[in-house]
Image (cartoon, rainbow, N blue to C red; front, top):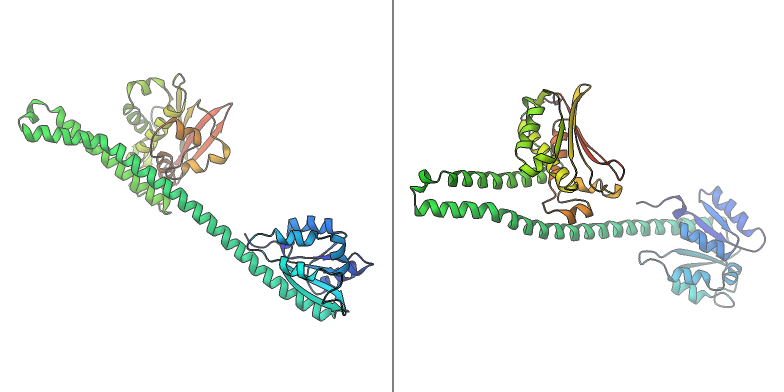
Length: 380
């Protein structure tokens, strides 16, 4: 956020005769943007829009009845608005001009009239340079506050992540530990109870998926892309495989509209993970009594597959945040547990293939995520 035009203009308050108008003309000729204020009230309004400096006469100070001092006293900590005061010769040390109050309120430069044009222009240019540095300080403070806020948000995310990681890993680790203890105590149970080995295998695969999701999300957040190895595959088969991973209750709510085949050159495993995430999200955030629809079709030189549910609309201001790692809409955060990595990985998968992920969400139509893919990634 750099200083804009209004923030580097000179506001002129000279209520006597044509002093203000003539002064603005002189400053304009020297390349300094100036705005004449007819009253202290107008000066106060214009200060709200920003100013690089204020030029006023003793008459202007008197007409304001302390308004300028009050405005200066309420400046932001970074701000020290330069004020140039033109007084009659001999009155700079006292009289009716409240010099002491103005000096306490801000940066004050006093010039005795008559003022040479060169002197006035030089003083105001110096004031505007000082004001520009103040705006640079303002921008640094804004950036600092933003960084502090991000650090605070990241701390919350880290704490939440550690809690979720501990919770989610506890399940498969418990399966592995219990099964391993049984096998160690009775090695022959491998033949008697082959399901123990299957349980260990599934638990290990689940932990492997968690670690892979975290690594991939970290790569995406750092500005990288998923590493994929595309090969010819059938998107319809990928969708059906992801459907088979759902439980019976989930599968019963899904209605599909799919062609017999949709072939292309894609990374089947990454696509399966993306489809599964979109399916599980649609089921999770749609009302339990409603259906989730999945439609796939060829579009031009590519394909698209849409996942629709009747859940609450995602507010427009949150529709970008939900694609960030550990991000989700406020309502979604309350509705379900999870790491908030699913949509990050889906979008990463789409971009790695040269495609994109499009979200539409309204109270009337519900929520639809559409995954669009070219038939073949450009780099392959």
